[in-house]
Each structure stands twice: as structure tokens, then as C-alpha cells.
Image 1 (spheres, one colour):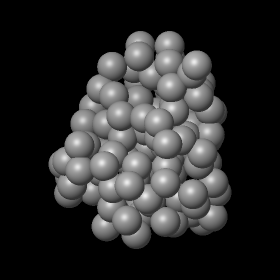
Image 2 (cartoon, rainbow, N blue to C red):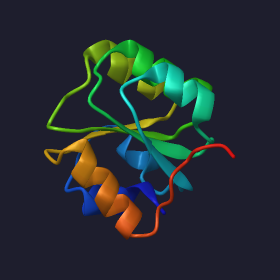
Image 3 (spheres, rainbow, N blue to C red):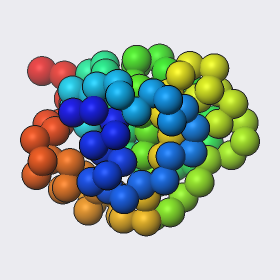
Image 4 (tube, one colour):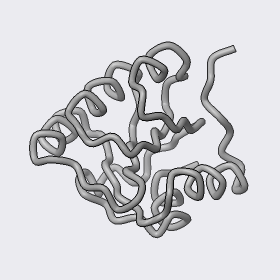
Length: 116
């Protein structure tokens, strides 16, 4: 699924790297615990989270994620946006809950990103 499709499905606002909306993601994950993301997540994924700190972007970068969606209208800090820009990672915000966001993505064919 292209990131632009995620943007449309979640009525999300792109906060940085709009020029990267054509990138593909192959799975999704939802977590506020970055240790779980490190332990279980596949690469080339989108992360849906409520957590707003620089560790989110650092963790996503370590896992080769290309997109982070902040649920419940949360917005990243300027430091987070700078880190995402350095890594060509799309950051978006949606007013939907994480639960709703993941349900919509799953219902449109994007599978969970857990390692087997």
C-alpha cells in the first residue's frame, strides 16, 4: 500500500516529507512501547502510535519504517520532524484513534507487521 493511500484512508495530515507519499509499506504496527516495535516489527512498515517523543522516530528509523502516524490528533515535536526529515520518513497525524486507524488499514488489506 502506498503512503498516500494511508493518508487518504485515515484523513491524515502530512507533517513532513510529503514528497515521499509514493513509497510503499507492506505491513502495519500499533504500539506505544518502542521495545515491542524493536522486538516484533518487520521493516517497510507504518507505525501507528500515541507516543510523541524523539525515540519514536529513532526506533522507526532503526526498523527501516518509512511512515509514522500519530493517532488522536497528536503532533510530533520540531526535533522529531527534523529527525524524520533526515531519514526521509513521512510523519502524519490523524484525528482517528489508533484502534480505528488500524481497523481501517487492516480492512483495506494492510496486514500486521509482526515477525514470525
